[in-house]
Amino acid sequence: MSGARWLLIETFGGGEPTVIGLGSAPRRFVPLAQIFRQRETLAAIRGAVAATLDRLGPVDTVSEDGRRRTVTVPLHITPERVHAVLLWSGPVEEEVPPRDRVGAWYFNLSTSKSTRSDDLLDLYGVAPENRAREHAIAGVFARVITNSDESDALAKIVRSAPGTEHQAVWTVRRDDGALRAAHFSCRILEERTSAEGCEIFMRGVTHDIGDATEVSSAPPPVILEHRVLDAAAAEGDYRAIVDLRNLRLLRWMGPAMPGIAWQSLAGEPEPGIHPEDLGIAKAMSRDLAQSRTSGVLRLRTLDGGWKVVRARAVLMALDQYTTAALVTVRDPDLVD
Image (cartoon, rainbow, N blue to C red; front, side, top):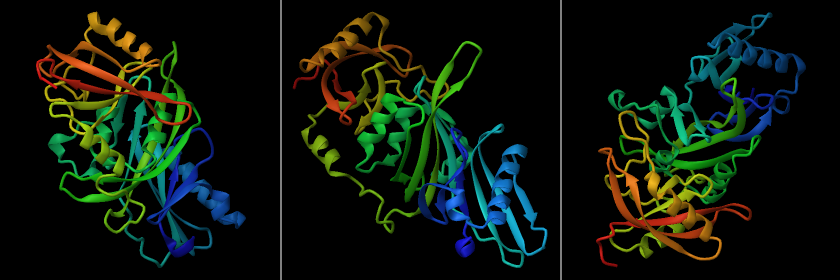
């Protein structure tokens, strides 16, 4: 193993485990056989990964000839599910090197909820008292600075096609203010969740690969497209990207509208449009194919009530085949 660095091996499901990190260097779903050419070494590595998944715990073994030690660390998303395995293999006399922070997560694309592992919350620098593991998918984008692939990533979320993979380097804002370059890898899977049916999940891991100011692939603090949108926003406007299939929030572009329930945190009301206004929202969505649309809607608030907003929507292309709505909401009493 080159330089005796930690390997990051994804085990999301949907195929054979592949390498997505070598030390702090990202890798593009590389088969183990492309890294380990020697048959005995490949068998030992595959065996260590399989043993880790089988026992749902770490492995620390020495080869039969007593010369090589192999160590694994599982990355759990739940006690019964491992998203990735960190693996080091080197001479027995060599000290095991420190490893990068890595955390597991998944998006339930059927419910628009995201779940984070404790390892990921460590990577984010979240204090123990603030550790909400589940929240809305849109909440992920409040912490990250995206790269030029953001539209592609959002398009994949909207399409939710099993087998789809995505990798990118985005910048994470830790709770201590540090900006870290984070390489994430994920795959969309259809999984049976009950006797009655299946749900669609995007399962992934995020790998801290260094200080964002020192990693050339990390995005700048503000990308050009966001500067343009910020410049075009009127005072009192709040902009969001909305999935046209289900009218769910994908992300806020800039600050969220104050007082609106959107994060799906424990103890908060579930986000939503007032049932009596769903017909207006659906009509706005249908009419976007021909022109810009607008309407007055009530949105769920953090206190459990409803807030009246004026909404204006335009169709936006995420990629060649996928569209969403860019929705601007404001207090109806404000003058343009």
